[in-house]
Amino acid sequence: MTVSYSITLSSFTHIEANLSKILDKLTNCGFTAIEIIGEPDKLDLNEISETVNSYGIAVTGITGMWGSLGKESQNRKLLTSDKNVLKHCQQYIIKCIKMCDILNGKELNVCLFADNRLMNFDKNHRLISPDQKEHVLRRPVPILKKLSSLASDYGIRLLLEPLNRYSTPYCTTANDAIKVTNMVDRDNFRIMLDTFHMNIEEDSLEDALSDSKNLLAHMHFADNNRKMPGYGHIEFQPIMRILADIGYEEYISFEPIIQDKCYEPILSKSLAYIKAIDKIVRNENVSKKRLLYKN
Ligand SMILES: [Mn+2]
Image 1 (cartoon, rainbow, N blue to C red):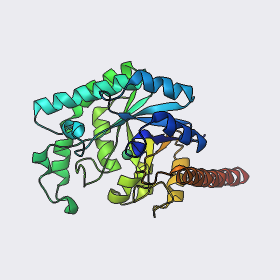
Image 2: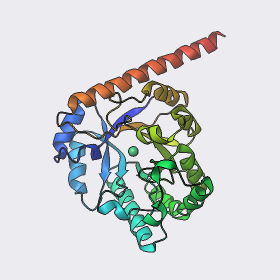
Image 3: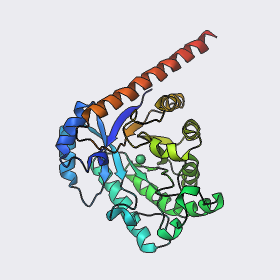
Image 4: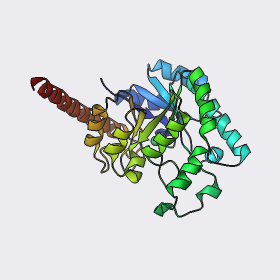
């Protein structure tokens, strides 16, 4: 039983334009898998496919480009009463599923952004009541069922990623995501958790992971400051310990914001740091099992 490691290409967009150069560095750092940026209309998929294959690097899936920062991503909102926005968003997901299939990926993350009418509140103080949250989170369920069926035809999983109150307040915790996932009720609709968002929203990171045990299909790893793990103050050892305890065998995908052009030493060190922790917690588990057998 073991985890695998990957890294998001979206981390490098503003620092390095050439995919071969990025892959050169990532393979040197020991990475063997990547997540591709979910911009199907902007990218030359044949070129990406050729380049990625030439490095023998695996594609875990597509990082959905959600959010309100980019011009393209502004209308990627599933929590809306605007039919045109909803249609546009569904088309985006369908394009990403097809893109994922072309690149031999297996998953796409879905985030639940809301239109401006639903965002009109003080983001710092959690003014959304649980009832209101549940009411809004029910809305996209029929669409998510349909999109899951389509993704299933391609052998692709849709992974709901809770974010944090500063970007979208309606799906921010593992428990929010579990509720939606249970309502969608499709085998290929699962959850992914991101340590950066969890650090802001969860009461306990360990509880959130263990509550998600049966649905957790992917992890994003970044420190509290969105740097590589080990460059901030999140404790990764308890996280890795719970992942080992719940038998997590999927990808841990690093999703940092890279600020330094000479990023290779940082990536190498952080990957080695997480791998070393993984070794420690798995050895602990082996010792625990030995004790069990002795007793
Ligand atoms: Mn993430």
